[in-house]
Image 1: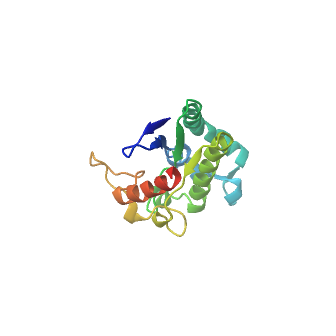
Image 2: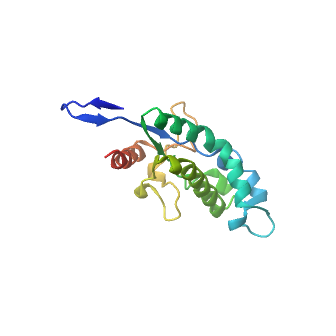
Image 3: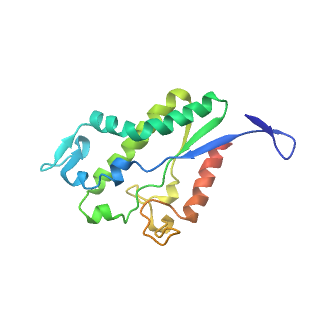
Length: 174
């Protein structure tokens, strides 16, 4: 919905919704020691077809996508902001989950969200390239390692990451 800006011009209101980290990746990390998506599967593991994987991921993507679609139908311009990449130093890697598996799961989750939003012309704000390692994981310099409550934080980016992401959001908002 338009609203007057400070300079008297009409500005467009944008609602940016930050996507949550896919629970199948983080909460299912023990699962990924025994199973692997077929595209990156190695012998000795149970392969999981992409169609099955995407069906499981719909459980996480559907409520967020529905909310964004409802906002759009109400006349607001919604934008889906991707969550920070999985941290390059995440304990899942130490516990035996292969990086290729986590990267594939992460990419597939984002693909699922984009497929749900594309028919409604809802933009996605991608991760800032400067925050990513060569392998596509979050660099330690952009990682929030301790929460405000003093607990280990394996999910959030820090204020440096936030500044980069705000720049990405402004590119979409322009």
